[in-house]
Length: 365
Image 1 (cartoon, rainbow, N blue to C red):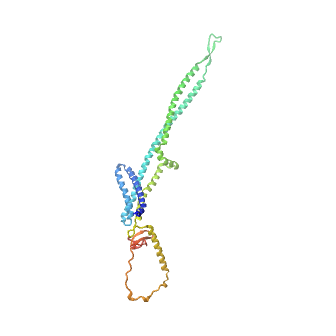
Image 2 (image 1 turned 30 degrees about the vertical axis):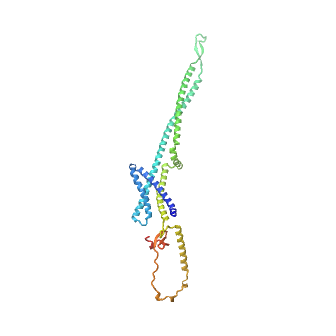
Image 3 (image 1 turned 180 degrees about the vertical axis):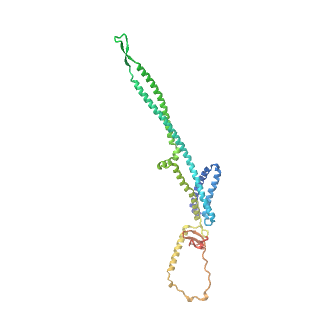
């Protein structure tokens, strides 16, 4: 019992691996096909699930009964298995591409929001620049008006011997002061507007920075964006290549593991003529030793000189001749191992021999 369990440990691991890969491939395929045919998703799930199970059964059936099954049925099942692999691959492609499109749509929305905010920030940047130019103009006006001084003028005066007298005019000074007060008020208003525009611009810049570093899109599509920038290839083309690589490995690997599990169990539980489990190492060792000994005996027989053979004719009497039945030749039971030109065959006497693969004695095995 323990030896049987030991023999089946590795085949069981292969079988579990095959089932895990097949189950995940079936899940992705069924999900993808249900999204492709969203109008009847439940019905598609039932149909695709049954086809996935049938595909694994077909793979095992073809391995177990390849030599005995009807050729027409074998051809149909082979074609059906290939078509089911293509259907599964199409479902996996649909599932993964839908997941990518969902994330890519988030990226598109994110980029559109960033573009909108950048246009808005450009508007506020223009306002801030315009307010700075206005403040600079006002500052120049105030500086010019501050240089205004009182001027000396002559006015008519009849009491003067010359008829004129010298006096100081402050009209220009008063006018400059009034103008300076107006410019100061304008500068105050423009400063307030510039502060609002600068605060809005800073808030928009922070929003842009937050969107650019959003974990939802950067974490998921960051590697693709890096590859796209590194190779100069659009992200859609890169993701398409990755999806094709995945689907060409995924489901064919599941089918290969199912066949490998069948083969491993067949080798581990193979029995000889007496119903005893065979040890492949012992079988091959015995066969090699038997073949070597047979070759040695054959060469020794061929090297024997015919002249050295002594026959005592006088001991042969006519009445001693009698018909003696030869021992029946051993009959082949099954093929233990197939080779390119010769097969290892188990005979009913319990021994294994090498037989030419085209020999008629194993034609119907």
